[in-house]
Image 1 (cartoon, rainbow, N blue to C red):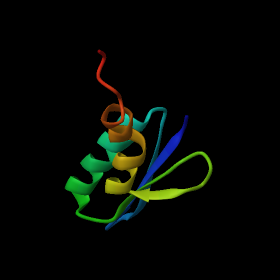
Image 2 (cartoon, rainbow, N blue to C red):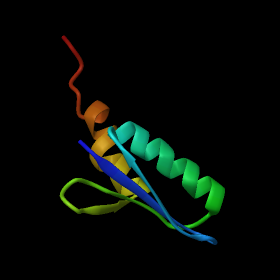
Image 3 (cartoon, helix red, strand yellow):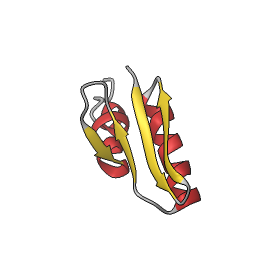
Length: 70
């Protein structure tokens, strides 16, 4: 699945395309730390997420919902 990470910088908009949710979140967090600006991640369907919503929907949800093996 493809994701587009976008940030508004003092020099104008900046975007990166990534292939995994983990990479998209890491890139987004790095951009947020560097530029202290709004960072969003867009999925292949055009839905736009802020970093916290994206983390909940795509990254943490996979491990948080896993059932422990008995």
